[in-house]
Image 1: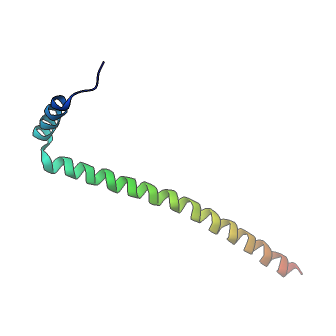
Image 2 (image 1 turned 120 degrees about the horizontal axis):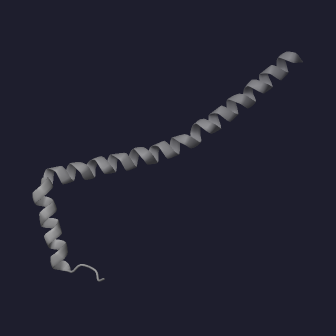
Image 3 (image 1 turned 45 degrees about the vertical axis):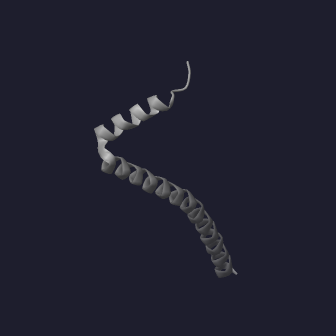
Length: 69
C-alpha cells in the first residue's frame, strides 16, 4: 500500500467540509482544545492536594505531640 496523494487528500477534505460544514469542524476542534487544557490542569492539580494533605497531617501530628508534653 502507498500513502494517499494530494488529490486523495483534497477529495477527503472536500467531502468532510461538505458533510460537516466549516462551523461544525471549528467548533469540534475548539471543544477538543478545551478538553486538552482541562486535562492538563487536572494533572497539575493532582500533585498539589497530595502535598497539602501531607503537610496538614504532619502539622496535626506535631500539634498532638505538643499537647501531650
